Length: 472
Image 1 (cartoon, rainbow, N blue to C red):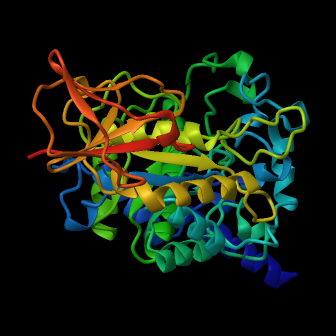
Image 2: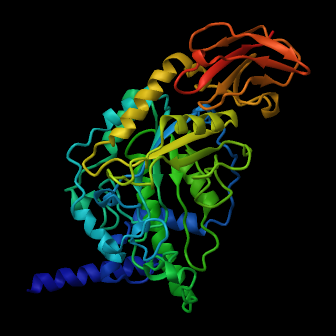
Image 3: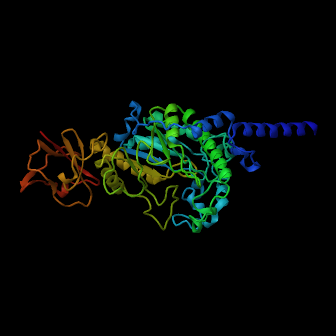
C-alpha cells in the first residue's frame, strides 16, 4: 500500500513540476492524460508557438524533389478508417442532421464504437497500388487520420488508434512500401482537426448541425489558450511520427484546422519545420491559407484554370468513404467515360486529378475500382502519351475540343457523344493529323479561318478518341 501511495505522489509531482516549468500547460485531468506529449515534443511545440519570427517561405517548394508535382497528372485518394465498417461518410456521419451522410445509429460518440470492429484481414495495398499504376496514376494519398481522430498507425499520442484497437498494427507501413515498390509517390492525408481530442471545438456545436455556429463565446481566455496549446503540441507529436518513421514522404495533405478565438495557427513556422524534416515534400494549402505549395479545390471544378500548382479532388462514389453495394443505387460509381472526361479537363488546365475511392473495411477494394483501372490501362496502352507527362492546352480557344500538348504536338480529345466536326481555329496547316489509337491519317480541310478535321463513326472507339496534331 505504501509503495502504491509513493508511486502516485511521484507521478502527480512529476506532472505538476513538468507542467509548471513549461509555463504553458496546467495540471492535466484524467480524460486528457492520454493526449499529453513528452517533454521533447512539448519543447518543440513551444518553440513553434513562441517564435517571434515569420520564416520566409517560397511556394511552391523549389526543392528539386518537389518538381514532379505539376506534371503528376493523376493520383489515387483513399479515405479509409473506422467509418468504413458501416459504409459511412468519414467523421461527418456522426453529426446530427448533417445534410451529407448523417446516420442516426452512429450519432455522436456512438460512432467511435466502430473502432472495435475495424480490423482489415485482407489488406493488400500492393494490389491497390499496382492497379493504380496500370491506370496511369503517379501518386497516392491515404487518410492517416480523419477528423474523427482515429489514426491508422500506432501513435503514442491519444487513445484512438491501432495501438488501442489492433495491438499496435501499423496500416501505413504496408501502404508506403507498396507505393515505393510500384513507383508511386507517397502521400499522407492528415487532418489537423481532431474531434476525439478532449474539448476540441467541433464546427457543429455538440455534434449537432442545427447548432452550427452557435457555440457560446469564450469566457476564460487563458484556459482556452492553454487547451489550444496542448492540442497543438499533440498534433505536432503525431506529425513528427508520420514524417520520421516512414522515410521520404512526397505529399502531405492537410484538411483544415481551427480553434475558437485562435487566429494564428503558426502556419509559416509549421511548414518550415516540416520542410526541415522532409525537404522535398509538397504540402497543400489547408493548414492555414494561403500557405501551401498547391491548391486543392474539391468536388466541383473551378471556373477556369487556377494559377500555380493545383489538383482537383473528388470521390467517384456517393461519398468520401467506402460505399457498400446498394441494389437500389447501381450507378453510384462514376463510369470510365466520366472519369476520363474529368481527367482530361484537369490536364488541359495544367492540374492534377486526385481521384478518391473508399477501400472496404476488410482491406479490399470495391470491384468497380478494378473495372475502372482495367479500362484506363487499356486506353493508356494506345493513347497514354496524350495524358501522361503533358503540358496544358496552349489556348482553349484554338479548338472546339479539349487539348493537351507536348512541344509542337497538340492532342485533341474527342469524347464519347461528341458527333461534331473537330475544328482548329487557325488557317495554319499542320504537318500531320492522325488518330492516335490506330495511327491512320485523318482528312483535314480549310473552311474560312478554320481547319476542319473529320473523324468518321467507324473510326470511333469506346472512350476518348485522341487526334494527334503535329505542327511544323
